[in-house]
Length: 289
Image 1 (cartoon, rainbow, N blue to C red):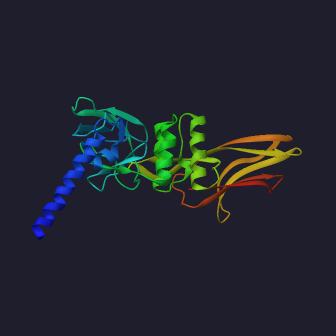
Image 2 (cartoon, helix red, strand yellow):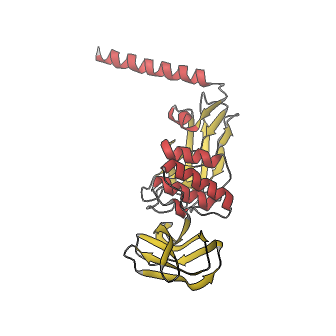
Image 3 (cartoon, helix red, strand yellow):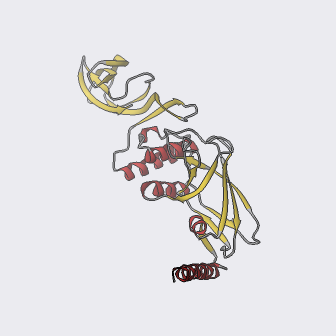
């Protein structure tokens, strides 16, 4: 009786599997992960190494019942077979036509989403993975709908996957980068930082975690003529860097472009202080490294 029960269960499994493939045959489209989980495609995913464009080669072989189009959505995460290397997440939107049943090869860009691990090495194999959820998925969908600098995208993904500072999101185009920073601040429910924080280059692990420069724009208003000094202090009040020393300025709106090398400074909170007339604190702005 036990043997008959096992045979009956296998028969049901084969029946429903066949029925599912018959139902999906001729479908216009299916997401990559669903097609993979239902054995409608076979995949090979191999890294070409590094963080550059087209750093993943995705090979898809359609199987029986495969839909006419496979949709690789933003937020799909590929899993490194070597856990010392970072998983890669797709932040684009790709439709792959499967008509003809022949293997299809696509070159795509995957962004690292485990900042404390190594960058992908050449010929490293990746598993088919899964579609992310929550803030990481929302971020990838936002990125796919716009146009952003790749370095800003990478920092933005780490700001969610590894809780890095939004201040570290820096790109060549100020407008799109600020849009990305605003979206991240909304996701994380925090204020948009007034400053930008750059880091020293990494090595085998691409994110060094070592701050190099803080930059930003500070505005302040003077009611009357004043003698202005600006400096950076640590949380204990020690002056770390003098920026402006006893400079006379007239009344009105003033702007100061900040750029300070913070390489080697201990991690923590610091303050940019704007003083007038021998030490009266006019404004104070905090930043973290």
